[in-house]
Image 1 (cartoon, rainbow, N blue to C red):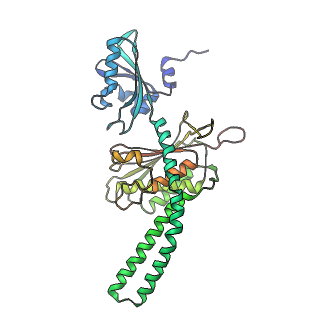
Image 2: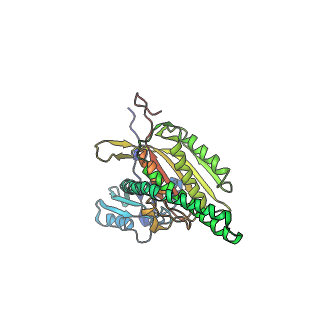
Image 3: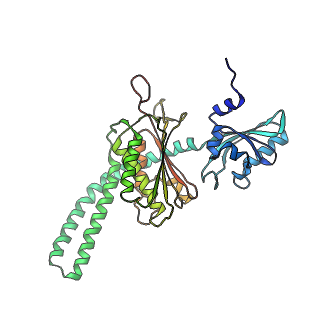
Length: 364
């Protein structure tokens, strides 16, 4: 039996592991660390860990403490968010000295963001459900009177002078706008179980891309970065199209119509190890299929990020604040999670969804 090399063992670890030398120079990094820092090992070896950390980061102090004391030291819930790693990156850090080379410190990073995202996702689902009754009430109490108001305005328009017809048209237009808003809220009242079947996520993304390129995103470059080997997702194709179309439309609006190098990246990946507990049950569902929409727009204000998926929270001057809340509801109804990873000039919306499992237990 062949004994695996140290590098092979390191690269098999799912957590980012770095070896850091004097002056915080990065000496080595496993595959997970390359993905976490978004740089190859060759690039990382030319940089310092301090280049990736915010000024005064406790991670750097932790490394110095390990060197001083010669023992392993842990720090939990450390915020390493910044321009390089994104605004919101909460991690646990374990640092240990290398016995044969005391100045060298091994640093292991465990990102807490995914656990926190799952907790927030439950909050998002609750927030979406909280407007269910509101949607039903609005549909009944507002749409009917608006129909009467619009009808009355149309009757007045027939006998009104030309200067008054502007006002009757305004009444009709505003009535129509309110009806559309109410209809969007009404979607939250849908309580029927989602009919889910095996869905090829790449066909969903290709469909959305065609829609975007012939309409609101025709002035932008749309890049595909797909993992062709991922299995089908267990979902509702029409609803998944609605979710991705909503995210792509938001990305296009964030970039703006006058951007010279506007770009939207659609990506898929297979992520092992992400499991979500089902409320009220001991069952845990695996969420290995990742769908991401990334844009190079100006970014999202940090103060809005925690509440971004709540109803009526929006960054748009004329937005209703219901698009992302509906995204959270649909993804939640699919048993998945959705979150935003904001960064300057790089905003990523990422969905994690369950895959379809055949009767023999294999992904299809």
